Length: 223
Figure 1 (cartoon, rainbow, N blue to C red):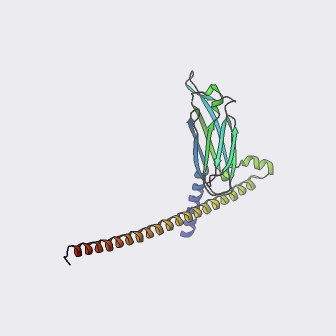
Figure 2 (cartoon, helix red, strand yellow):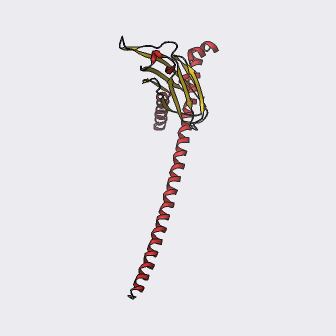
C-alpha cells in the first residue's frame, strides 16, 4: 500500500515538473537595437512552439498599443553546441517552431528590425512571449478534428504523449547527472594532481634549503 502511494506521489511530482517546465509565458521590453535572449532547458527530440505579439508605446496615449504590420521580429535559436537551428524574420505578431535534436540549454534570442522604421526610432517595444514545450505545444482540438478522434481516444493520446514527455525529461535528468558526475570526477582528479604537484614542490624546496644551509655552514666552517 505504501509502495503504491509512493509511486503515485512520484508520478504526480513528475507530472507537475513537466507541466511547469513545459509552459512559460512572459513579457519584456526592448529598445531599438536591443537583443533579448532566453535559456530554455529542453530534452532531445522535443517540439517547441513560441507565440509572440508586440506592442509599441504611444506617447500621446501613454500606453502600449498593437505594433504596426511593418514592424517585425527576428528570431534566432541556438542549440547547446552553439549551432543555429532557427534564424528567421517574422512579423509584428506570429509563431515560431523548432525541434530540439540535442538535450541541454537552448538559447532563444529576439530583436526587432526597428532600425528600418522611423516610427519606432528611440521608442520602446513590449513583447509578449509564450513558449510551449513538448506535448503542450500540440493543438488537440485540431488533432481530434483531423483524425476524427472520440473524447476517450483523444484523452488516451494525451496521456500517451504526457508519459512520453516524462520519459524524455527523465532521460534528460540522467544526462545531466552523468555530465555532473564526469565534471566532479574531472575536478577531483585535477585537485589530486595539484596536491601531488604542491607536495613535490614543497619537498624540492625543502631539499634545496637543506643543501643551501649545508653549503652556508661549510663556507662559514661551522660544520
